[in-house]
Length: 328
Image (tube, rainbow, N blue to C red; front, side, top):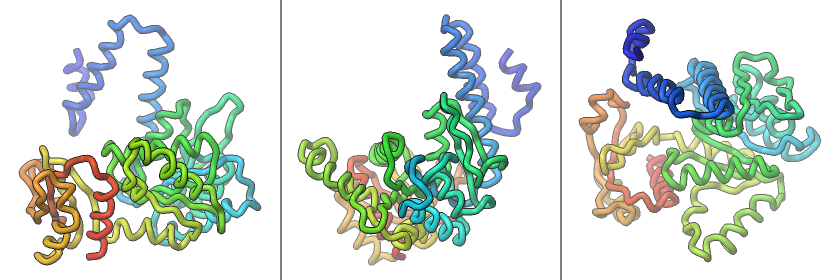
């Protein structure tokens, strides 16, 4: 019956994945789940579909997600920081994604301007309405669940900026760091932006270095996954620099392939191997043509490549390797 449904829909591609989705949906009918479980599943899938459709026309446009407090007032220095940061990135052709509510979320979309703005709102019991800078726009998405909202705030963006905030901001920032640290998300520029002269994020780093790292719960190198600054221009440069040469990475079996516009020279490869060979299981870093799996999927075949058998346990040093590649 599912195959018959697919024949009638006649999807142009990825029929195998769509079949799995329909099989999972059909399986729910026989699992004896209660109505609430089914409603959660239905709402999550419906919201994800709506978000995918909204983002699809802008897939190739670089995006930054800005996190921060809904309670920040327009006369707060952090509001001005977020607005100015968004304006600068919009002038560079980036789009700005925020949670669509008030405070820092409004500041980001105000600075970006409606043309460069995406809002991913959350429906709360006390009804958080979309801010006026995105209300009524086709790029405004409304979510019932925080987990689907966080997926869309993180999945589509190439860079992230967190300003001071409460539990929600800390939750989003920590989940982002967890995803990058564990390799569940690709390396990305993450900026923790304080107000001028502020200490909010410096206090966060002190906690990590004084309480978390000494217990062996993170590595000290993990603080290389983000940049702390109170300077908007430094924050913008961190985001732009990350995509100056580096484009993407992909695992092919046990080999990590890093793709870029310009490959290192022979001397450059030797330097990379000397500095970063320890994060490879065999100590080697090499240039390569697209691997067979990449060729079969026609995956960025025009880009230059280096490869290594990454040990998976040095996200901070992998991030520094990407920073070096961006100097070529």
